[in-house]
Image (cartoon, rainbow, N blue to C red):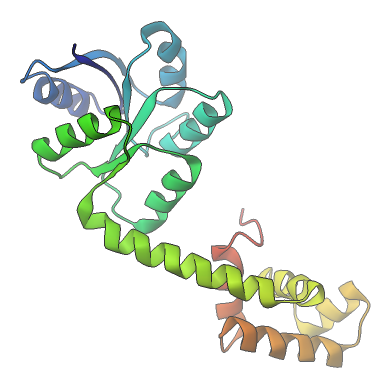
Length: 214
C-alpha cells in the first residue's frame, strides 16, 4: 500500500519537484498540496495523509506555528520537516514542539525517502549530519537549566530586569532594595551563569526564554 503524502510549501516549483521525485518508485503517493499553514489545516481533515512534508518559512502561518496547532489538535499525522534551515535553533524548536523527522532540502532523494519510511515505521528520523549539533545543543540546554536552578528567586528577578536593559539603580527602585544589594546579586548572577558582563547575562536570559523578546 502506498504512503499518502501531503506537501506544504509556498513554492510551487518545490511542490511539483517533490511530487515527481517521490512518486518515481510507486510506493509513495502525493495526494494533496498546501501553500501555507492555514491552507494545510483546511486540507488535512479532507485528505487525511499519512505523512505531512512541511516547510518552515511560509506566509500566513509558518511551519513552527502549524506544528503547535497540530499538537494542540492532537493530530495523528506524521510530520517530516523539509527545510533549508540547518541552524540548530530551528531544529530544537521543531523537536520541542514535536516532529517525526527533520531533513534538509539539499539532501539526496534517497535520504528523503528513507526518512519517510522510517517515520512510517514509528521511529524518528533526524538527518545524520544534524545530529552532532543537536546533541551539543541539548547538552548546552541541560547545563543552562542547572545554572538557572542555582539562582535564587531574587537573583532570577534581577536577571530578568537586567536582560530588558535596566540599570542597577532602576532595578533597586523596581524591587525596593538598595543599589548595593543589587550589585551583590549581579555579581552572584555572573558567577553562577559563568558570564562576565550584562550583555552575556541578557543573551543567556533570552536564549532560555526567561524574558519575551518582541
